[in-house]
Length: 440
Image (cartoon, rainbow, N blue to C red; front, side, top):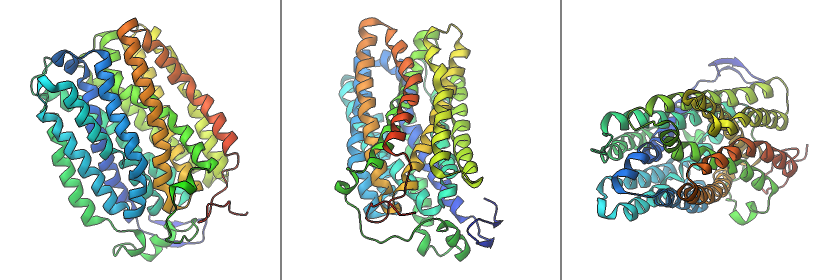
């Protein structure tokens, strides 16, 4: 939004743009988060050879992270809603950075159990990132701007995934020498982020550097809320909670690209640690474009007069259709065409995902946002764990046929899910402080 504006709520004049400074810090945190979690996926073929892991072993390491991530989501969202974004985000990044650096201490004799343990701790800490990020966006942006703001910070997931292969490729040799160094790199970045976050962040209502005009703009389309906390038991029965949870089932597809993508390209096209950078650059730049496109389009449709319900769902339906061609990747003989189609799938997923996140802040009161995000993301993790176990087992027994079914599911699942989301939440009527539908 430009600083000088006349908006539909009647607030006129200079609103300021301090909220984008907060968003920049969320972008930085999520970049660090995805760099940390992407390192193992990038080094997967090299580490698998170095430590003599089977595909089932590698799947167990990925499953460890995801189980911990799911467990973390059970309580991290609630903790962040209780502690607030400032303290909750700091705790989250401190935990994941500590366990990220602990990877570097693992010795070959204990490589499997060591990586399983380190990934478990990493998953617990990283579970706090998205609940904290979505809560921060809900606090600092009006509803009409949240999809675009979410698209901006969600684009950082691709930035982290892009940085990982280039930094790893520059430091680590094909035979695995210096594999520990990338795990230590994020500790420095995390320390810098915590310093900036603690120095910069306060909630909008009490922030000394936020103008009254900008605060009014932030709250221009949100109802006033009480400070009373909403327990999980009140959120679980709501159809809206499970509508959002369904959208996160596709997280398994995103993690498949992230954690198994380098292995697939290596086994299918001979791509190794020294030349994975350009394919990942293409895939995740396309994913970034999808993040920004999805956030911009639904927000633009709302500003043109579309209902939030129609704008979000039509955007997600278009994403689901765009993703369909990724199903053909396993039968394609051209490496670059395969990379392009995976990029299309990743772009569609990111656009889908940020509109899925905004469904929560569109419907639920701000104080419940992190908790609902936690519940929904946990569902996505459970599906991803099952997918990892199945894929690892199939690859060890039936070679690459597992990739065939993985890409078929990756292409078709979004279209099926958007239909069920609409059935569960046909009108997207907002919920008040008591989780009752707001009367029009």
